[in-house]
Amino acid sequence: MEQTGRLDKLRITVLAEDSVPYETPYLAQHGVSFLIEGIRGDVIRRVLFDVGQNSQALLYNMRLLNIVPSTIDAIVLSHCHYDHTQGVVDVLKEMGKSDVPVIAHQDLFRLHFLVRPFLRHVGVMQGDSREKIESSGGTLFLTSDPLMIMPGLLTTGEVKRQTDFEEVGIDLKTIEDGQIKDDPVLDDISLVADVKDKGIVVVTCCGHAGIINITRQAMELTEESKVEAIIGGLHLIDATEPNLKRTVEELTQLNPGWICAGHCTGFKAQVELYLAFKERFSPLHAGLTFEV
Image (cartoon, rainbow, N blue to C red; front, side):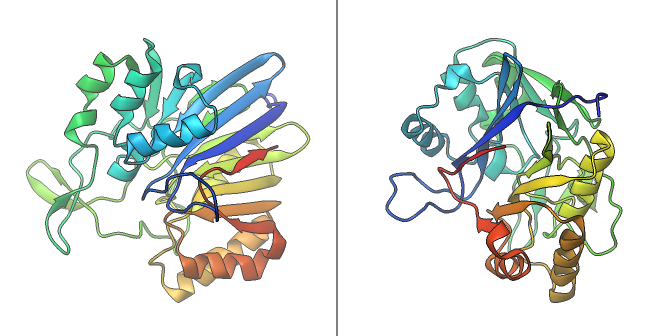
């Protein structure tokens, strides 16, 4: 499909995650961050997808992986949650560049909070405000539309909620016109890579929009029916048993070549995914590298 183009090769490195592999020096944190490298001919674009919540742990892992911050070309923030955005200003300062595209949904900076077990803001923190991102070298690209980063690599944009069994997974709130309202996390976006002779790779950091919704939108955007891989957090940790089983059934129908899931996916969901996909499933952890 030449409307969005195709990559010759894709490389994904897990820079931050809730877990680390046995006998490795990486640091874990509640959060996730990926380095996405799209390769097309002699053009390579390196995209940092989310930054976790602890920039020092993230940068420590990057040093171990010999990844130099200044080589990053753009940052994508999947949604507003602190465990995906906290420290983006620190990372921009480490990059030491100007006009770095920082791509996210237009509602990224809204007030976003929980009321159980107590009132707590869980959105973008003050240290990573719009103004501080811009003064640290970032140029904000805030849109609900899909955005092409390079031919073959694009964001999903705001994901259409098409299924009747996928849920946000948390009781989140916002305030509009002085009224407290449920927040459906419409800013949850993912990355899609269309790789020549392979199909699409879907990278989702938290999957509040629902992994079936996300994957279907990725297929529509690229007009590609083959799903090579699904990687990231699927936010099934608190899914009901029927919804979890339905999600796994639908994933089986989509028939991805392999799945690597962690962060907010949850142990029960990982077990169900392993039972369904066997050797085609593996848990996510910091330090992993994939090449497609």
